[in-house]
Image (cartoon, rainbow, N blue to C red; front, top):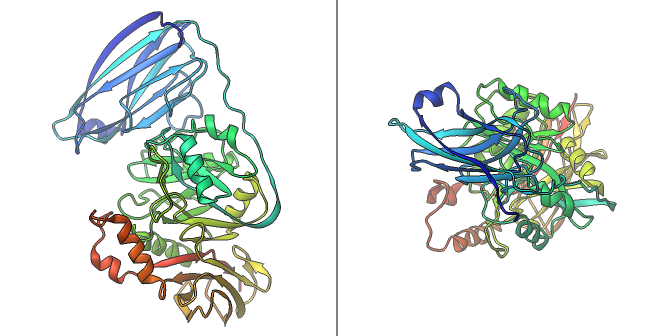
Length: 475
């Protein structure tokens, strides 16, 4: 690293109160940066505790009030207490590059502020040592020729937000899982692309993503190169979020709409919904119920599933709690980011428990999942592989309309009826249930049940193995 020639160093102390959080969950501490600065270092100290959590980030002079399209220079949430930004490099989660002179701001996210308040001390150091100006990463656009079913995970994290593992380790985990595509959605930042833009290939296509993370709900943005402002403070800001995403040609998905962080904003126009996040017993019956209610109300939203895997600092073996549990499987004319995004929006796929989980596809008179079909009385076909002895459940807007046992590992079935609004299917574990629960409890070892679930949940909750996207009925 070049020798630092320190321009200035300053210490700023602020006291945060619950009234500050009530007024605005983001608290700004300005500081001035002179021309010629080549590196900024910021360190934060505060009495971190269960009831006191302060997030950390930075904006440069171009930032505006919400919603801003410029000026973002980094976010680490509660995962870090320091960062640097330089012409040639930056802390993961922060944007390297030109350092415009003017008034910068450290932004503090007031996630948890105790009644007694909290004193936050910021140490800000500037230097002007000579450094090269490193370019931003260039996105590759790989394509794998050939139509078929492709497997991926649409929500995971690296050390560019709150995971301990590097992008290289997550890349290795995706290859180990046999995935075809992967969306790395670090919290409120896009800097993971310093690695993933350059390493996307026909073997493993990386899909641009960012998780908009707030105390009132999380949402994934897909297919947008720009940073999207996450500083939502009102329920109606969700509509602003959707507008920003769609104006840029991206997709918006509500994430893990279930305890402990359900979606508490207005529901904007969304393209997808993460109906299954992490292991099934992680309250996914709750998000699936919300999805069913939204479909029944007449909304047309594609179902996706994702692991929300936070890559550890080592490569873990395959198991029920790692990447691609569950897996989203899409029918694509080719493997490319554009094809993945189009299939996500259209609902051309299903969610299954793992990369080797059951296959589930339905169609009506040649119309695939995500299609709209005319008429009232329909005959639908289902193709199910790898779920012999389990139960196939057909649902419409009124709930379950038919159930049957999957007779073999390569099995086809038909359902005829007059479904209301849509028709979709689920594979519910029956013959496989005890094996899956044994895998789950064995992986836990001596640890207690996670996520606040109870032994009764494990014993009695229906265990889904796969979920299809709907086919919509226009009659």
